[in-house]
Amino acid sequence: MRQLEVTWLGHAAFLLLTPGGKRVLIDPWVMSNPVCPTAYQEIKSVDLLLVTHGHFDHIGDAVSIARQTQAPIVSVFETSLWLSRKGVDNAVGMNKGGTLSIQGIQVKMVDAKHSCGIQDGEEIIYGGEAAGFILTLEDGLKLYHAGDTALFEDMALYGERYRPDIVCLPIGDRYTMGHGDAAYAVELIKPRWVIPMHHGTFDALPGSPGEFAKLVGSRAEVVILSPGQTRAFSPAFGGVR
Ligand code: NI
Ligand code: MN
Image (cartoon, rainbow, N blue to C red):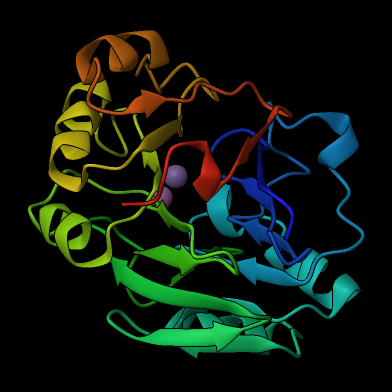
């Protein structure tokens, strides 16, 4: 099996090339994402799409990419109904606490403290609730994408119960927790690696990856990526707990 490759596309968008060779795109906001590199603005092939919630900066290009690639797209139930109404054939609904085995990957949906209205023209559609995902990949590595969220105590439960190796945490502040609360979240979750996200996209997101890394200290390895940058992870690098 190959190493997991994680590419940050800016904001909350990540492209994973899994140990089993699957391309997984999380929170596909690429075309109008001001920090997404041009090379990734058009995604032509993907095996699985995951959407944490219905805000434009997460669901942004989900409809067009899902229609074009016919890849299954996983989201909370109400959001999946909306995606189906928008002409997506492979919308897969689930809800928090559930696990889905799809494309060889275990996808668990977990809580996030955030809202989930979908902007649809002039209307705001009820999209269910915002969520996070804990993925178990083919080699056993676990990646927790927290979506947009405030700090909340169940993160400790997720750390204890699911033991994610890699965690993607929002640090931008204003719409999610900032770097201070995110560093506290690292104490709760206790991952080996943490990737800060949801920062630097707009001026309204003052959270700083440098400050975040200082606060986390030696509790986890802070992997600061720039948009378009890839990092490989393997259980052999330092052991899955
Ligand atoms: Ni949001
Ligand atoms: Mn957001």
